[in-house]
Length: 511
Image (cartoon, rainbow, N blue to C red; front, side, top):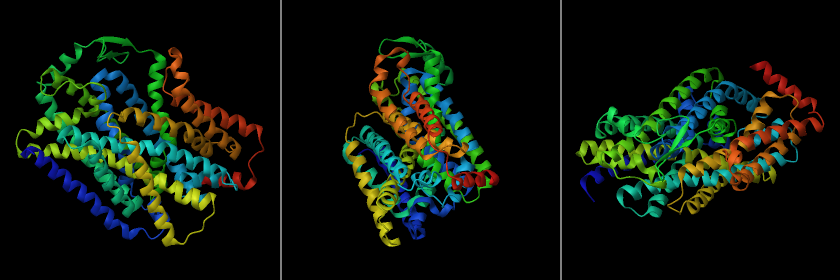
């Protein structure tokens, strides 16, 4: 192994050890399952903001998004980023405070399935079971995409076997999450968001220099038809521009709808210690998201400029998602100091992956241990046994994720896209109507979840194949389907009990 690679690995090793140490240190604060899954609602405003956005962006920010921009230009990535930026702000603005209050008032709910069951007084636990199953269905492949990103990173850069690298990365994530729970995940996410930011800055500065300056980057991009247009996209295979209609723009921006149903983000809202400080969190989170996504798209364009300058090789297909890895590799060849900087970049990619994977593991394991085993089947375990079961479920789900991530050719962007659509369609409408519509009832919530989840699969694998107007992102039609079923079924079934409406009114009075 060359000296520059040793330098990069040393930085990455220090980073990974640091994450495990944090997990071990915070494990002492997990006295109950409530602490393990929600941190006792003790998060400060900055940790809440940055851990929410770090867990949101995932490896998609440093691998998926620049990869799309590298191959097709700014339209696909740009409209998606714009939708996400709007969705981020609106989610913090209208959801955060309401769900923080409502989950506490409604029997101190500390998971999303708990909240649905308590909010609608679903004594048969049908809502809890359905929502828990959907969390498992969509989070396992989502987590697998993070493991795959880690494997791609080490395999493409160091020539390490993909599966081995992926498993080692997964084990580190499992260790600190299983030990420290939600507090460890949130604290490490906060640190990881800082590392991700530093990585983006280093890449931008070096990439522009290596590509011959920003003027040269723009000049090379202009040579590709549709590459710098927001109303067309570039096809690398044919070398031509493809039209970008209004429906496609709406479809890409529909990514923003997904925020209303993301369990790992909603949990951050539920966990903040002081609800009155959510305004600070909203501002910090929104600014960071806009800047980081803009930088990520720009890196994809700079990466193409570096290819034209023969600094990095041309990246085809899913290999375009390693553009930042390729830039880091070139940077590392300029001496040991730059190798350390490259190590920070790679640690940033790991950070973006791990910050999402840990949150997903917690959400999925809580669905099994607390909601299915404890809630649906009514197994009343003592405090110590609940912690054992919680950690056991987390490890089991991670193992399934490792199994699904064994294919090195899987696309991080595609997997994240489908899982994002699933959560947005299944939970988004229910969260919105639970918080804003007094007339919503459990029958509408059940119908909304099932119809939204079914439509995601149906649209993705059947309807979209018809092409034309039907070739849009599955989240949009599935989300609308969930909303329609929520309203129609709620109106066709009995009104909520007085206990439910009184609780709703109480929450409104506290806003």
